[in-house]
Length: 125
View (cartoon, rainbow, N blue to C red):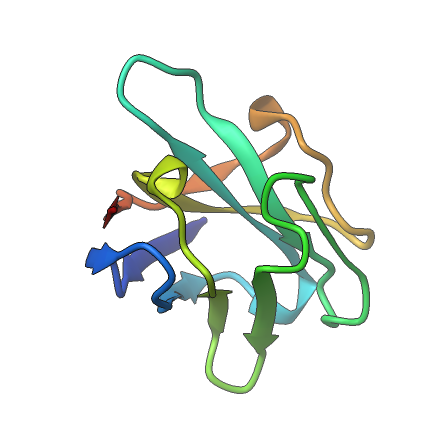
C-alpha cells in the first residue's frame, strides 16, 4: 500500500512558476514508478509527466515539454513537479500517481495503482 499527499498548488499569474510536491509513505518508494496527471473542470484526467523508480528516465506530455520538470528524492520519499512559464490552460487539479514497477510507467490512468487527493493549480492571465 502507498499513500500519496500532494502539496504546493496555488493561484499564480501566467508566466510564473510553481513547484508541486508529492510525499509518499508505505511500501519501498525506490521501487515505485511515479507520475503526475491533471484534470481540468469538465475534462478527463490527462497525463503530465512520468519518472522511473531511480529517476533516470523521464518523459512529458507535449503540452508541458520544456516548461515542466519532474524529479524525485528517494531518500526523502518525495516527487516534485517544477512548473515554469505557466499558462491559463495549465489550470487543473494535479495528482501524483504511483505503481510498483521496475520500468517507467505509461500515460494511461488505469496503469497506476495509487493516487493522491490532488492539489489545485490556477493560472490567471
